[in-house]
Length: 126
Image 1 (tube, one colour):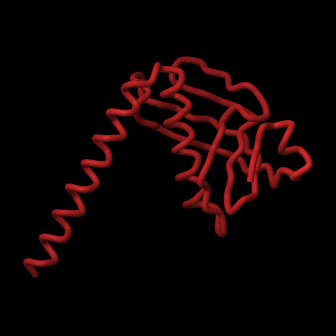
Image 2: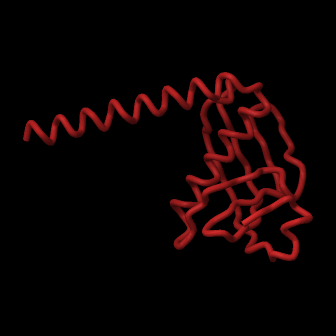
């Protein structure tokens, strides 16, 4: 029992340290870049959790179209995510906290796989 409690405590400490490091890195970014980064991470987390078989390792909100920002909300139709060497388009709505450090909500619609013939045009890679 004591070993289990110690393991849980160490896991909590490791997670807190990772979050602290991420916060430190995010705080060094200017607000628009921070906005993009937290929404990129939210996209990968949401899709990885909700879409069977997808494990996103990269997201770009503005690859195929502009991101519109109004207050704490970003929307776009030209976002992409990469999973297992394949790229997929998505539209999204991402709402952050005013300091751009956390995502309050992330909604998306997966638009399907992007053909490899369009990758160069969009600046995508394997």
